[in-house]
Image (cartoon, rainbow, N blue to C red; front, side, top):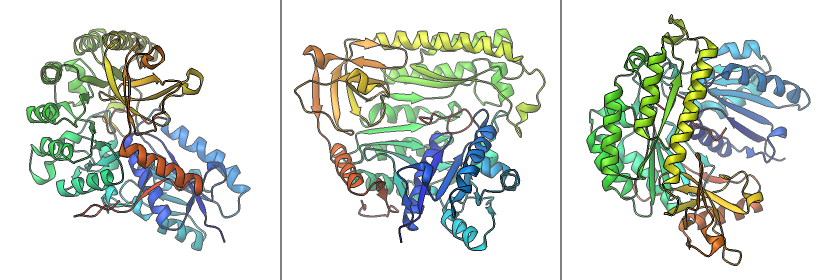
Length: 501
């Protein structure tokens, strides 16, 4: 008898991607097999987001489609987890009675047991824990990449931003011990990973639970010193908690990438106060200046919300001013929309939709202009690119490959007609020949210019994983629980109020 198959669909931020890798690992360990075609899986898991616009509509739209699929597939099960499940709870089963399991953000490790209980008892199982049961990173994982990995250092958030529902869904901040984080990173590197991204809802508040306000800078230095690890990133820091020791750790630790994603949300002091953001424009720009003093070529990116309740034309102009001053390499821009359960949803002074749209268009145009200017300054420079799998949607048509530079800019690069191709996970040094607002083009190899290929352990790991997946479809990159001591073996972009604080 063949194993029951599963498919996990992820909505939302990087933390949800991280959790989905754990959900897949749990199902693998429980004897399920990953489906090569999500349309015919025996178990479909929806890992939801409550922050993105129309999150409810997307969930129930997906569930409506799955109802007809389940009717034709005897024994099929549907599970809903993540932030929207934590918020809506039994309401999901009331609105979609064909759902078998609902679980929350604090008990993802319960999924296999809940699926079995629902199958045996022939009734829906709704289990929502009010506090974290097991830190997600201690659970088995099926990583989507053999060369790059997410590492959660904390979950939850102690802030009270008026537009954000995440603290109510993820709980108060819980920090992992530094030794546990380091053990996981060492285990990942032993598997061939050369890039890690440290995750937290408010990543640079790390250490608050055990009373060390300098813990994050120390952690950056420790992780960056792991032999074999070439790139360390983190997301997302809160300007309130950004300290000079973190900037020093970034500048003085070669493996830490010259990149900073630091949410602004608004350039107006008045709006920041209404958002309950505990910094002001000057503080934000001072951090940007200090980062650039320490790392002149750092790429700084951000998140901005347009049309927050009470935002005036002058408030909006202050946001445009910060964009011009900060010279962002890119920005995720959002039109404010009400989120039930947040203080902002009940505020007076809701900005008319047509005004929000007009401001959004002006902001997006300025962000693109500034980003393009910053990209143009890189034409003629050489960049080291980590070749990736699936970064370039048009690679086949353009006969290029794609990957990320050290500063996280997306680079589409040409390869020599007669030379060896880089594998995902290999490093390529190329010269930038063209710039666009959201990517760089490096066609130097096609014109006889700079093209240096460095084969890496990560490329070897990709080759092994790809061979295993070919031999056993759906096998992927499965890691067990990391242990102490000798280590064993919609891109989702974040939405404001999730991992981007």
